[in-house]
Each structure stands twice: as C-alpha cells, then as structure tokens.
Length: 115
Image (cartoon, rainbow, N blue to C red; front, side, top):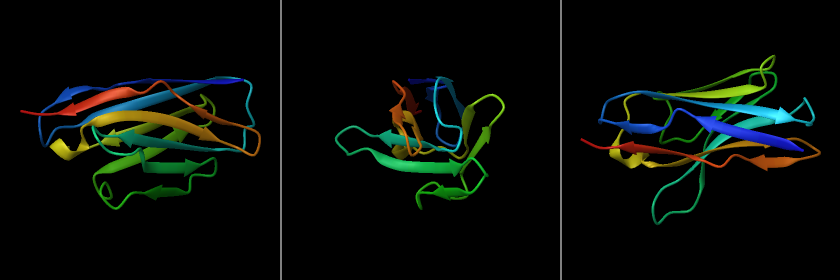
C-alpha cells in the first residue's frame, strides 16, 4: 500500500513563489505517473501538472510557464515549483500516484495566495 505525504503549502503574496513536495512510501509499482491536483473553494478538483517516470510532463493551461513539476525517482518524490502565484491559485493541492496497480492520493496541503 502506498502512502503520499505532501508538504510546503502556506500563505504567500500575489507574485510570490512556493515549492510543494510529495514523498511516496510503502509498496507501489515503480512505473507510474505522479501528479498534482488542486481543489479551490466551490470548485471541482482539477489536474495541475503530471509527470511520468521518464520525465514527460503535462500542465493545465492556467499554470503553464508559471509552474514546474519535477520528480526524483531515487527518492520517490515529486515537486511542484510555483512562481508568479495569483489569488486564483488558492486551493488545497493534492499529490497523486497512478500506476497499473494502484491509484493513491495524499491528504492535501493548503496554498493561499493573498495580500
């Protein structure tokens, strides 16, 4: 069973930066895609960015050129570097791991962009 633990959320002013981290532990298939989703107040959860084990990435249009997803396969970790943050980026951010054997979610970390 895989466990995902996120960290790095917090309060930041518009235009600021934050880096989210997610560490996977337990038993899981090494060939997987890791991703960040978010759920803003009153909205459905949406994909922010995803990255395959080989490093292929995909981003939501709303975060392209501002956010960068990366992963460290040796550490079973995924990161989300968020720059030029906007109030619309305020949400709970969730880490997700998907393989042919499992689909797991972290508990979420709050990101608030406000002056």
